[in-house]
Length: 88
Image (tube, rainbow, N blue to C red; front, side, top):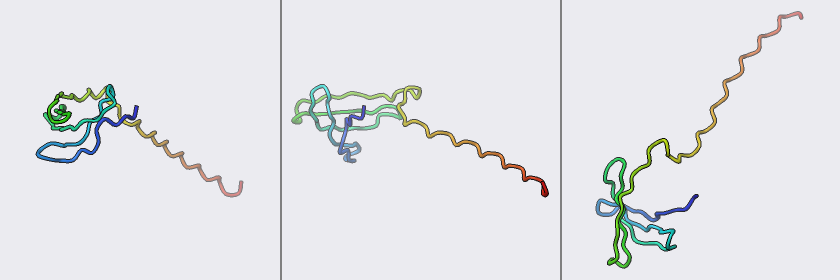
């Protein structure tokens, strides 16, 4: 879809802090992101430092990964043509 959810993340106090966009509300909030494990991120956000919430995001299994399409495989080089016999 191409919608950027987080922006301006910078390392601070053992976490990354920046802004997170809530598409349902069309608003951005302060966010703190920390790594819980190799497959989990802890996301905490606040509005006016008093209304706060948090979630744990889990990495999707590799079969669901939305990676960029793989580059096309290179075609094998054509076999060199045999030279014609001299005098023909």
